[in-house]
Length: 232
Image (cartoon, rainbow, N blue to C red):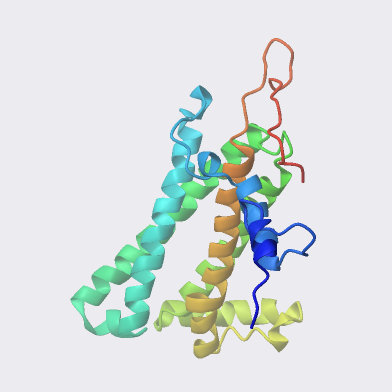
């Protein structure tokens, strides 16, 4: 079998051959390198206005989310009833609960802080939208967690929520009295959606950068040169 040496010799340094349609992997690689270069994805410096507690609460939200996921993974491995019969299970369940409480506390502060800072300025609407979607999906995840406790608390929550869910028509596929269904929503589907929104949100923050403060003298945000290749 012969090999076209000239075609390989004329290949560009980036791996694309002139006159040959690039594969989807090549197009994805070029898009990723263009919009998320290493100096943006893993920066070693930040603007001075990033030294704000609002951004600290954003980082704390990510840390709390990691604690929730890790403690939840341990609970999933040991089983949903483990914390009822084991002191170690009760400790891990408490870590999971308080990690969730701190997650929402940090997220709400970050969300409202960014709202009053008008964080969607400078073509950052997608960053704001993904943050809001992560917050809304997290609420549904928390409710399915309360329904998965296997105690009288979860029984009361489920029976009280049943009529309201059925009134919306969602009861046709969302049965809050079905423990197995709520457990799978809580440990698999909804956390996956939250993780996707959080990941996209962080990548968009890296791509667009954090929103600059308003210019008090002009009543608008400072002008910033848009990096090349970042058009939406």
